[in-house]
Image 1: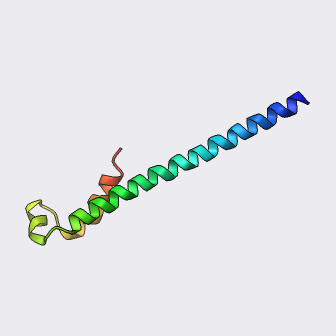
Image 2 (image 1 turned 30 degrees about the vertical axis):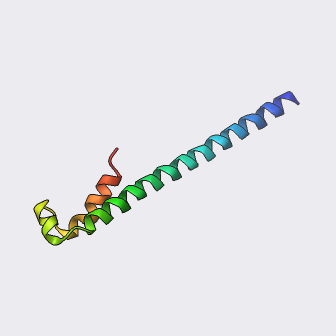
Image 3 (image 1 turned 90 degrees about the vertical axis):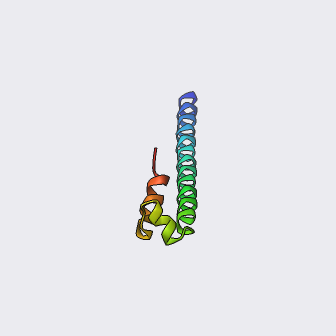
Length: 72
């Protein structure tokens, strides 16, 4: 009987670790999305002239925001 209890405890800790992993993944994705949206909004609010001064084209905004969000 003690052996069965030990197995249940291991299964629960495994499940807890999985759930913790899922929560951590969700939080990391949410943080990356926040960075993407903020970067995109800031760059999109610039005029074409301001973007040109930075050496950027409006078509590059999405890529640059993605890169900013996914830097490690």
